[in-house]
Image (cartoon, rainbow, N blue to C red; front, side, top):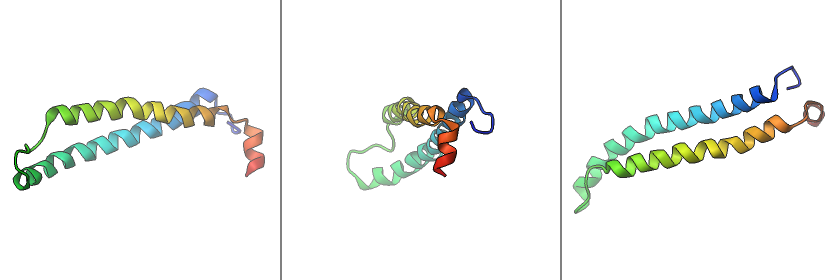
Length: 89
């Protein structure tokens, strides 16, 4: 903001970073969970290879909670006065 960025630009930048982390985590975590499910199913009695409802549910919960958690630091970063931030460094 000290270099001319608007508050909405700062907010979008921080949220974009958080959303990329969510997408990378889901992109790596879902295939890893599917691959790990089959060896666990062979070791545990009565456990299936994967549970579609659990994977979809966990992905939805993460997809809803993570942007909300990223919004708080983004709002804080956008509300800092530029001169105050420059004096702190």
